[in-house]
Structure formats: C-alpha cells, structure tokens
Image (tube, rainbow, N blue to C red; front, side, top):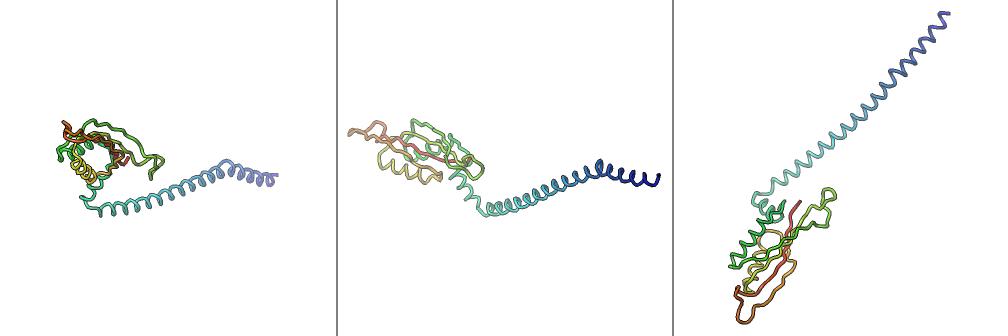
Length: 183
C-alpha cells in the first residue's frame, strides 16, 4: 500500500507546487518580459529623438547669430506690447510725426500649430493715429514695412486737412497694423 500512495502523493505535490508557485511565477515572468519589451521600445524611441534633436541643433548652429537675431525680431517668441509701441514710435519720430490714440487687440490664429491642437501663432492688432503730409506718411509706411518685424496693415482710414492746413501738421491717418508672435 505504501507503494501506491507514494506516487499519488508525489503527483499531488507536483500539481500543488505548479498551481501555487510555478504558474504565478510564469505569469509574473511574462509580465516582466512585456515591461522589458516596452522599455526597449521606449529606449529606441529616445535614441531616435536624440538623433533628431542633434540634427536640428546642427541645422540651428549653421544659422549665424546675426540671422538668428533677425529671425527673432521678425517673428518673436513672445509679444512685448511696450517694445512694439516703442519701435513704432521710434520709426514715427524719424519722420517727425507722433503716434496717438494707440489701442491693442490680441487674438489667436485659427490655424493649428505643429505641436498639439493649440495654435502656435498669436497676433496683436495695433490701431493708432498719425498726422502727416502724404509723402511723409508714405515714407513712414515704407519704414514700418522694412522694420524687420512681420506686420500686416489691415486698414488705413484718413481725413484730409482743410485748405488752410491742419494745426497738427497734415492729414490724419488711422492705421490698424497686425503683428505676430510664436506661442
């Protein structure tokens, strides 16, 4: 009788050992392999991103500092309303005219940016008035155009001085100019 019970006892012990110890360890090993595989994939992606970043940095380093300053001036990465108004006022003062009645309206572009769902470009509309002779006003507009900052003239309204001449020095021009920045 001992001989018949021992094999059954050993088989039951093996089944119990498998169910209670070996099978849970196999499942845990499979989970660890999946996690390891995910880490490998992440490391490969990180390596590819580093290579892409290094390629972009190499391209960036090929741009001269002077060109980079011009690019940052053309399309800055933030909006500095005060600096914008000062720059426009400096251009006007070169032509001996003054800017008055300044108002700002900030908006966001409706185009989607390259990263995510948010727009990558913001804009601000600046409305102001200048009094100048027509030829001086044209020179002022030309200097605004060549100021190095991306600007769109959205509207120009004017009123002509009377025949005796305006006390402010010429015709009255109200402009709305839109400028942009990267968000």
